[in-house]
Length: 175
Image 1: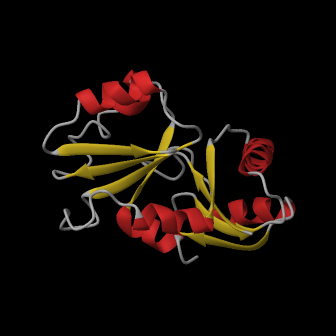
Image 2: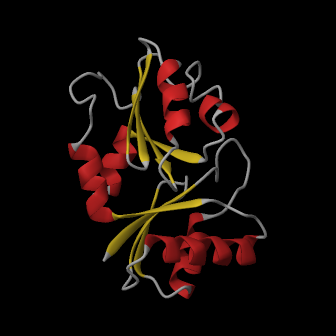
Image 3: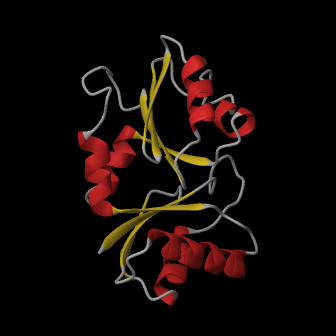
């Protein structure tokens, strides 16, 4: 089975710098095959005969912490699920640029009270739809001044996410 791993917060703004070649080596040491990286922000595709995303996540987080001395949250999805994400975009046709459209990947589904809180705080320029373990974000004015850019989801709602723009999600489907 082909999987996608999304590492949270690496190689962004000079914090938690990890070379992608070193990450690829960690994945290969874990026994994953056909490991491919995409851009320098913690996107990897790989093959594994392990069928549990949780098992893979735990193994990767442990291996990364052992190698780099840092706990890095990892979100894992079966690659076919990325196609489902693309096909299920509730904002399809409503954004002019991939820079407006983002997907937030969570480890677990968001609790209902936090979902309501997010939905209550959206605006015409910051729209969200939560489907399973993903949050679709249509940010008309970009990330910087959005709820996402202000850290609302992680700081206020206490939900750990890793974000990818639409172009990256499209690429993940074919890695």
